[in-house]
Amino acid sequence: MNNNWLRRKALESIYHAKSGHPGGVLSCIDIIEYLFSFELNFDIKDLNKIDRDRFILSKGHSAPALYAVAAKAGIISSERLNGLRKINHELQAHTHRTATPWVEASTGSLGQGFSFAIGEAYGLNMQKVNNRVYVMIGDGEMQEGEIWEGAMFAAHYSLANLCAIVDYNKLQSDDANANIMGLEPLSEKWNAFGWNVIEIDGHNNLDIENGFNEAKICKSKPTVIIANTIKGKGVSYMENSPAWHGSLRLSEEELSSALTELGATKNDIEVAVNG
Amino acid sequence: MDKKPILLGRTGDSLREAFGKELTSLSSSYENVVVLDADIAGGTGIHHFRKEFPDRFIQCGIAEQNMMAMAGGLAATGLIPVVTTFAVFMLRAIEQARLSVAYANMNVKIVASHPGLDVGPDGASAQCLEDLACYRSIPNMVVLSPCDPIEMAQATKAMLDYVGPVYMRTGRSDTKRILDETYQFQIGKGQILRDGSDLTIVACGVEVARALEAAESLEQDGISARVVNMSTIKPIDHDLLARCADETGAIVTAEDHSVLGGLGGAVAESLAQSVPAPIEFVGTKDVFGESGEPDELSDKYQISSRYIALAAKNVINRKKRN
Image (cartoon, rainbow over all chains, first blue to last red; front, side, top):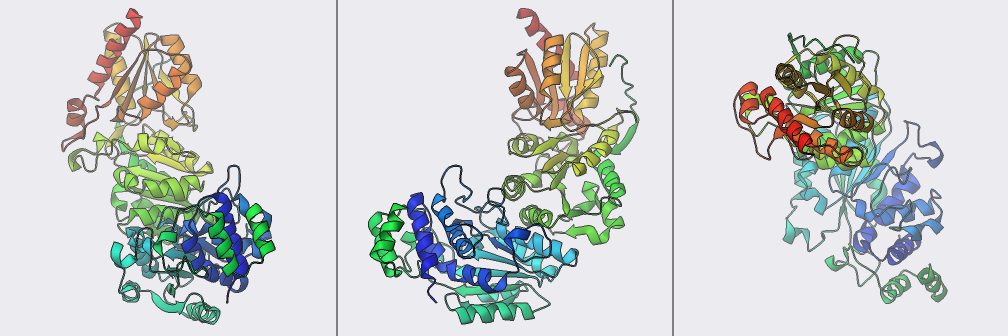
């Protein structure tokens, strides 16, 4: 898979915003794209109906990935993307429910979207609605105690309609997870907390598909998909470098070089830079 | 209101019990109400609900941050979540209340028991003297602090009928009954419980009873004190405050809370922009409490009726100087 168009649009929006978090956007974008293309029962025209799937981006700083996917899915017009982080614009830096009605939660403080998703999963269960709730969390986010409060809760109530995805790119703001606050052994942790644990390559569509299918089969526990990903995936100078976590400003040269790698023509780049 | 209210004086339910009973009684018709608890239902009054509606009672364990943000998610599925725990633990989860409840503007009700020195022997760790200030500063958040079981019951219904985030204080100790059955609570409206012309005492929660006692004793000293029950801290009743400042010329605020940023702060902010008048603040003086009985603590920390009366005399002196 390459999802080059999505990657280009997300980076372009960060360039025009003059700030943002490109590394984590590029690591999670393939999974979000898969969810919106193949997995979610979600219709922008029918947000008020209760029997629909939900997706929450708990790592809210990766919002540009979600917005680009939404543009591709026709939920928003792609012309809106370059309004990211601009005043009086619906595309807030971190997803925000009241500014962007098709967005499920307000995020940007790590751990909270995960709990919000658990609340939705519990609420749907209680009301005998069979739809599923998907929530994407970051790896550094798992250093928040709230994640483990929620992990206990979801397992205690056997919320099998809940599927968490860890964007496990192994890097966080300042450095590698392992140097900031080690997360390993990660699968064993989730397993010990009572979750169904699935490991996948988060950039491989077949792996992603198998992971979500396997998650749906499990009817007794919540599932966590630990998606091994590459921070900055698709842009060689960003890959596996915490320097591109952000929040940072992309220069025109950096954008052009990234877009070239992502298959943009000279003309595409000119259009992108001029917004 | 001309007639003096009868300070019925009969010790009734604590505010937490009044809340728990009324919520339980309302929940037969409010079918979307669910209650979240962090292993403290016996203390918050919500044990009544748990008994009656076990399927709508959500035990969250001792994990307030997850509980608060989860409430936002529950509301997103059309339920009306009522988050319950001690006020101090609402501070622990305040960032979740800010983002996942208030910023997202979810229809979540946050009901905090054990506010103030009224907590008594459990001591400073549990005596929350900061919650009104903290929750009041969050956009979209309505903040309530009813004064007696009658008002608590009505405020519970009003809170459920209001669409949006609400923070409401209950209370631990048995309370004196102040209002009669004709009282009608309305979010955003204060009420004059006793008329007076020399100053106005604006109080909330358990301090309303103390304010009425203070007004009685002031009367014996020839001072006519008006008493306002300001059970909605936010949005504050600007019109009533301006009228009282205009008609009585001096204000005392009284709350079982720090003098920093709570009811006193709200009143001062309001009057500074409308009808400036001298104000004295009765509340804890930027200090923590300690173990002891509520009445002992209220004297030591100078929030008892005696200190309200003293503040009234001080503010009248300032008025004369002006």
